[in-house]
Length: 250
Image 1: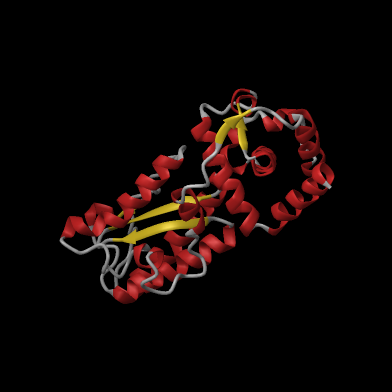
Image 2: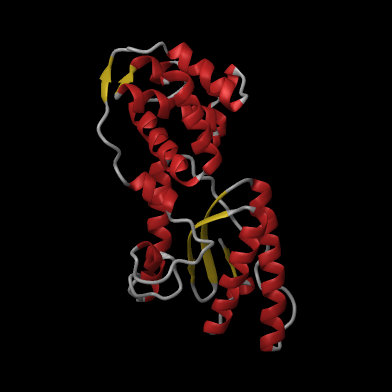
């Protein structure tokens, strides 16, 4: 988020807001930054993003500088518009993501506006009440929100080591990658392992929880949601999964 310097308005009228959103779409697309949610208030804005720190910094730097120049030229102002560098907080769990998007969408209630009819947030796009900008990614949030089919703890009818070896081969990944919890939702080999195992076996073996650094069966379920979403939206990941399925299951 960022707010106006000395609490000044950063959006005076709808032309300003449209200009900001147009620049947000351009900057995020150019840098490969996913925008999951947004809300523009009179003197500040909130964004929920997904991407690298470099992509975030580059996109926000371009957005802030170009929008400030346009704003000043249009309204006859000069100097800085925002109070400085944007503020950001890491989102580390699915639950935190859901709560953060909900908080951003509810922001207009603080000024007496109905969040569901507020024109300058992404809530309407999530609820299908308006066209979704091409640069707004609602699928990650919706994929986490939707409950996957129930998974029952069961035995290990397949050799987990065989699945692991196949994933390493298809993704050209070392064994340490499958155990690397620091890469989170972007660890595609780890997500592929979960997807291949559960979709084939239909059960959640205790070894899948303990062996790969998952804190509980709930975190495995979250990984399964992300893997299924990725398999439906990312052609390279989908192709890799299909290749692994052919190797493992014929």
